Image 1 (cartoon, rainbow, N blue to C red):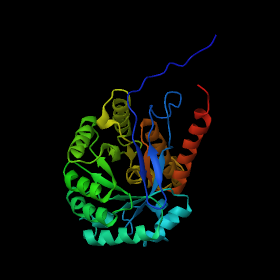
Image 2: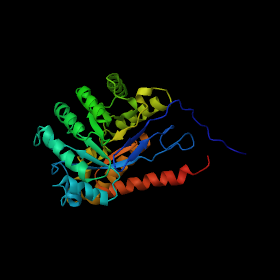
Image 3: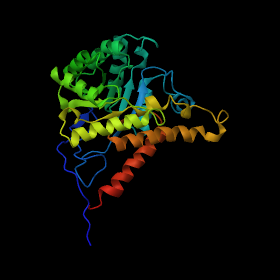
Image 4: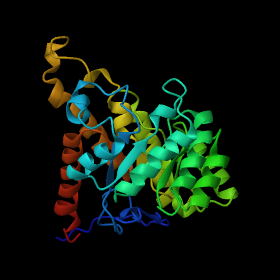
Length: 319
C-alpha cells in the first residue's frame, strides 16, 4: 500500500537577500516551513556570519578570549582571522559607540567601517550597539560610508527606524528591523518602515533573540508564528527572512562562563559553552531563522554540519 505524505499549500514566498560587493552572500527565498523540502523550494542554505567588534570586547568570556584575543585589537585582523576559519560573512558590532562603553563618535565608527570594507572582501553586516538613541546617530553615518558596498545595516527599532531606514535606503543596503518578542510589533515595524519607502524585499526581521534556558521557548514560538503568518496565512509584512543574533545572547549566560571548579557537575566548560551556542543556533534554524550571527568557530562548525546533514539527508529524498 502506497503512502503519500500530506502536504501544505503555501501562499507566501520569502524574498531572497543578496549582500556584499566583491564576494556575495545569499539567504532566504524559501517557499515552505523550515526544512520542509517536500513542500517547497529552498534556493539557499541558512547563512552564518561571524561576529567581530570595533574595539576589544568587554563581554567576551575566557572561552572566546582564547580564540580571538590575539587579533581583537584590530578589526581588520579579526575579520581576516574569521575568514581563515571559513567565515562567509562578517557582522561588525560597533560596541565602542555605546554611551556606557567608549561612547565613540559616529565619525570614529565610520572610519572603522571604511578601513574594514577597504581591506576585506567578505559581505558585511554593520550593527550598532543596541542603544536606540546612539544608533540613530551612528548608523546613518556608517551607512553612508559603506554606500555602494551592499551591506546589511541594523538594527532599526521603533524609536529610531526613520533615520536608520532612510540612511540604509540611501546607501543601497538591506535592513534589520528589531522588535521586542511580539508578532504584532514585528509586523507594525515593517509596515512603518515600508511606509517611508523602504522596500519590503530588503527587510530582515530580528524578533529579539535569546539563549537556551533564558526565554528561549518564547522566542522560538514568536519566530514560528511569524514564519507561519508569512508563508501560510499570506501576511506579506511578515513574509521576509529572519535573523537570530545568537552569540550576543548565549555568551552572557552562566552556562558559558561558570568554571568546572565552581560547578563540577556541569562538566567541561569548553564543551558546554560551545554546545550552548550550537544548540541555540540549530534550534532557531528550526523555528525559521535564515541568518545567524555567532561567535565561537567550533559552534559555527557544529551548526554548519547540522545544516549540511539536513540538506544532504532529507533534501534529496524523492518525497
